Image (cartoon, rainbow, N blue to C red):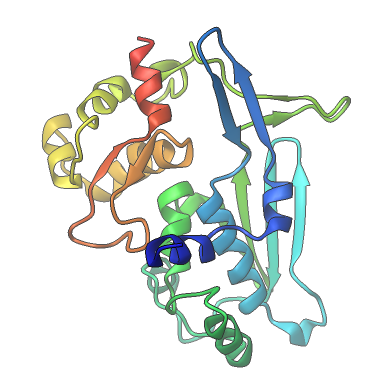
Length: 242
């Protein structure tokens, strides 16, 4: 096994998380399309962050709750007093449990301080976080709906694509076609005749990343100046049906 393959394997979800992150399959005359409940990278980072940064002085472990339409991960403790929310969202980290962090780094479950939050933001945006005086909760909406009565799973129809998948986002189809080639945020903003990077990421990039339609050229460094975005195979399959 090559070095690159070895590194990628270490970044995969643990078997337990893979089991919970169930996949729904949509069968078409031409192919089988599989859709996981939640973005794998964001899920992995959220679980690790909840464990490493939980305030165990509350004598409460992190809580993981799965509902038909969402996953909620709740950890005890507020943000450190010396860390603002803006700094938190920018990837600045102050480890609450330094020994746990050291162990996780030794076994290569974490790479660098604060690297997990940007990965979560790129998939789900800031709105997935909720802060209270004593707890922090992350909510990931499900890409697949699980029927609570019979356990059946369903994914969006392959014909419900582009505008139908994102009815509140104008010109989403136009952007998808543009991203057949690798594009920077600057290129996308210019193409869409927009200027606000923050709003553009929240309205366009996060939903497309979270749905598995868009991917990054440098997923391990989401804030890299060299970052580019392009359609996944799923995204290419979608526009081929249009």
